[in-house]
Length: 380
Image (cartoon, rainbow, N blue to C red; front, side):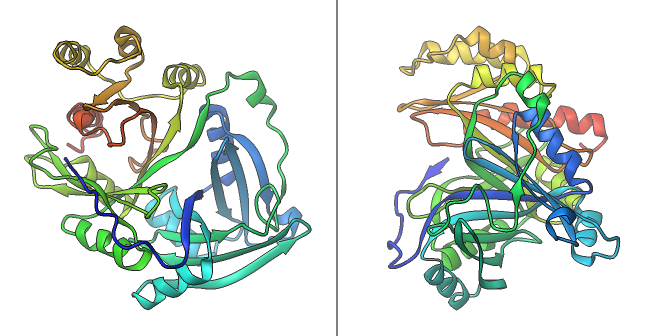
């Protein structure tokens, strides 16, 4: 793996603060939102639909600490944009939005450097203030919306009403997912570099971390990855592409089933991954299988390492939690099975202990676990 220390020139104006929310276009927003509440521990936050005067689509917003997911589905069968998107991609991420400062400067810079503007800066307001937003297109059919909330004090956005509480949520154990750690975009072969360049040129992001297929491969498949981040390094977007192997990689499988590039997985950060995974499993969330041999190898490697893992390895083994480490610290991570029938989106749960990598040491174990599932689907 390669870590980059050159952050480039600090932007003169405009600042990316954090992930704001992630919008999914789905066939049934009400059911999708309920699934994420019951399985992953989200709670209803806001709603927009026929009852609020929105005649084209229903929008159900759920939240867990700083994580906000929006699920939207169309009311009308001839809604060309949403119907085409869902027909082509299945349920998937449409928009990864960022909370920003000085949206005017960010949009002006992006347009000047070639970004495709989907919707120029507009304002929405209610009794809680005003929000400024603008939307650009990134890879494939994926969008980025910039949201300036500096003059808004509402729960979510104008046009939404508070959602009804989910009584089931209070009966199930709390999960404790805190914020979006990173969001991964998969690309067809040979497209990763051009996408990374787009983030550099249009959003003034820089390269944070990368690996190539000489470092990340199994007997059957391989990948290349470049992690892009903003100047403050609070938003991280790994860009992956497949590399040639004996058989089809999970990246290529994603691209084929999604119908092009898109968001493959979303990593959610927690400060207690063992408790989070235990409660997620109690809620019915399914995770990829990790063989016991992984932990045998881990124990042997840790014997000669100065890194001390605070958690009991046998407990991590019981839950299937992976460990990656370097001289500074370590991370713990685990991956769900696909969140819908198409093998196109899954969730990562991650806990960091002074480790800022992306689990390169676990990629072989992860690939092998995914390849087991691919073989079951007849796609390896």
